[in-house]
Length: 322
Ligand SMILES: Nc1nc2c(ncn2[C@@H]2O[C@H](COP(=O)(O)OP(=O)(O)O)[C@@H](O)[C@H]2O)c(=O)[nH]1
Ligand SMILES: [Mg+2]
Image (cartoon, rainbow, N blue to C red; front, side, top):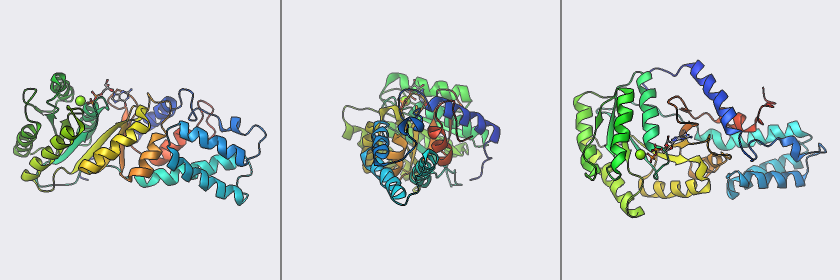
């Protein structure tokens, strides 16, 4: 990485908002573990209730199984004596799943621009994430250019141009209906000519059919590879957390067709659950780069496993971890 680091004080504000926004709604994320254990004794029944809560929170059956099995082993070893021990055991288990997914995006020095494709279904937050990421990369000292590869929807190009103006970065676009591969081909040349560090490529989320979309994305990938065989350097899948298990199904399809290298999970503020992050980390084994908790520019930050686990285990305002 050749840019500057993010500022710690920004990080603190984000963690506060993450805690506040993720602990909303009627789910296990707001659930006080104490309610599970009225008598204070941890037994198989408590673990079963916890299991149901995890599944409801979109952690997914397989991943939940992993967590409960882990706790069951602790129970058998008499390590879950009280609520505090259950809390600690759950925290350790959740962290064990999420920690391997914590591999922040680093912008490597490349011959041409470092190319990032933003892919995902309509409405997942691709264009917004590009806007936030452009802002962030500029703060870190990188020069940025945007490519309007979503030529399918008429408003998509304008939306990206608005983000370009807001961040004061150039946007390469053609009229809607143009071949997105041609847009990317041109954008790469423009970025190379202007010595741009990072080229952020917006893409469409829906075509007439799924294979049409995958073919289009694969063609964009090939075309940019003609300029630079190492590009795209990152294929970032954007997933809407409120889609729950559906997000995981989408991810598997995109991964199979294109080989994703990173994930951004958006709208954790709009989801009462958030458990999908554990399913993603466990099932896909692809790094989670960023998480989004709102529409503002600084509502997206680098994913940190420990921070996330601590945020979801803190129950509302009664934060026992602090
Ligand atoms: N609450 C919330 N809304 C978001 C977040 N990220 C994106 N959005 C909103 O989701 C909607 C769709 O985003 P957009 O970037 O257009 O999705 P795209 O179709 O994938 O490009 C917009 O209204 C965004 O403002 C987030 O982290 N939290
Ligand atoms: Mg878009």
